[in-house]
Image 1 (cartoon, rainbow, N blue to C red):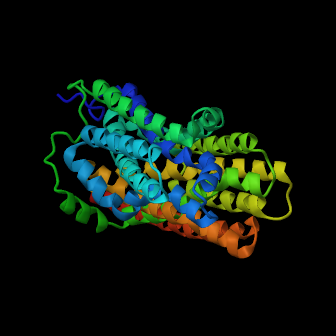
Image 2: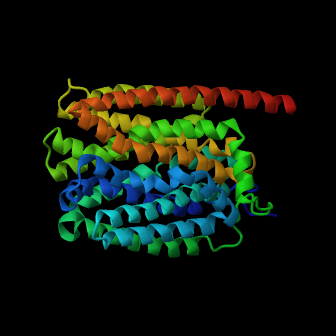
Image 3: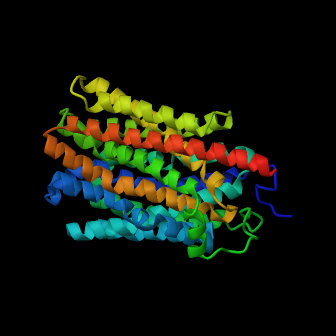
Length: 411
């Protein structure tokens, strides 16, 4: 009898913890850039839009091939995929730390992006296999905190580490941590008695699995909704220190600490989403409430009528309320996967939508700010994508209700 959590009442929270550690390390590779941007712009003589591309290139691999990477991860298994992803994070971060030009920085960020999307699609498979069905919503809601959790740690470390080791030292340190995490992951998942629920199933070729998933409506709606969220969230968090320094006149250390608090607030929504779903609230309700709340908070953050304190509160609420969205969407991937061994493909397609938003969001908002002559122009960026996300939430709710009626009828 398999010892997987699908067939056992006990959940393997130790496996969940290690998967979270891997995810948080991946999230740190996003967070290390935001506090470094003011220094990078000076060292490499970057304009605002180019600096935006440095921040967003981390999502290049996911934006270009997240679904196919997810299918490949399903093929080779989540443990090997996660270890390979950590290796890519290490290579990219170390390369960036020793780079001497803008081109090298951008190429190294592209390598890191491969590691990030690999982590994002493989670790949920580890978690799904490690927890009992009754714990799945909560576990995946907790998993949704890996990006804000990692970003927060990196942003809190930066003001302390930057004067001592500079941005290059931060890059090198992150690369070394990724190498160490490969060993931790291999050791913790070495126990052969733990197997994902689909381990005995025949592997599905990547292209075949991809075609099965892209023929379904649900994964596309997950990708659309996550795209609308990421267009806003990373745009706010990547530029938060620069916004507080340039537009509000805060000191570097103060701006980064406030930005870290804003990023950390996102974890509140992620965990709350898992709790609300576990208590019976529909995914559509959670998503709609989050997008409406983000629109209101964005107007407070970027609008011309508030002082610095209320703007920071608006940013905090924007992040906390927005955290409901990844928490709700990540819990939906097993629901919309055609088979349990295709969860990675659905995760990949959803993360591809997220990464397209994260890739284009920071430079787009930089362009809007430049053209409009101030950060107030970013308000329209947020409002437009809140409308897009609300439409995705409505369609996703319609799809899940339709699927539930079909399943009931078939039963």
